[in-house]
Amino acid sequence: MARVTGVERQARAAAMWWEVAKVHLHTSYLAFKRASRRKSKSGYRQRINRLEKKLSEAAVVPPVVISGSAGAGDMACWETVTSIRRAISDFRARWQALKLRSLFRSHTHHLGHSARDFFRRVSNKFLDNTVLSLGDSSTHGSVRYRRLPEVMREKWQGVMQQLAAGPDLIDGFVAALPSRAGVEGLEGLCDHVT
Image (cartoon, rainbow, N blue to C red; front, side):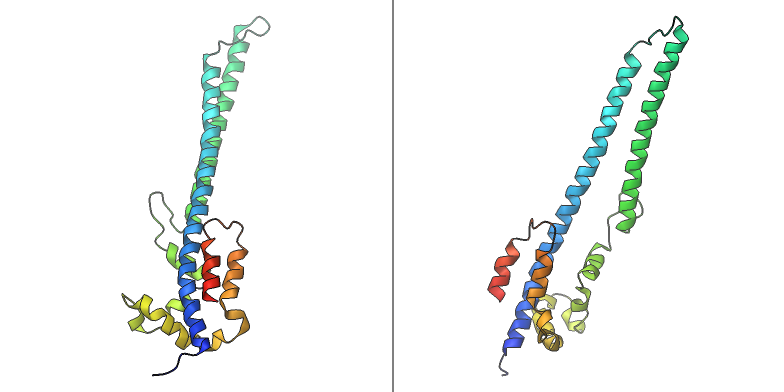
């Protein structure tokens, strides 16, 4: 039986750490995305509700008689109502355009369709696809997670000997995130691994 060296142990620990870090990054990314979508949606709804309230108040108020002619008051009221309706239409169009841009970014070009390529895009973004493509066909399926540390140890042994390839690099990336909500558990895990 071969002896496990320090580099192999470090590679195995880094592989396990990265599996947990991926889950934390994924959940925090989804939480940030959901929170920003909620803020945007509530902002547009609030603006549209305020304009609709103004519209209902403008439609109820009797036209003001300007300089003795009732027609001028009707015209001023009509212009106010028309401008409010245009503003409502403009805000709704902006909201729809924002949603459409979001759908194009997530590669779902119509409403009600989930982003099937989300995990592939996230794995490309965080360079996780290289880890998943290292092993042979025996690493896929139910034994994939049990064999991942061995695959990383075998394939990444040369990489792990470099100074910049350890868990500190990933920890620095996590520390550079704008908000650390949902990522606090990684520090204790990193201390445990190193």
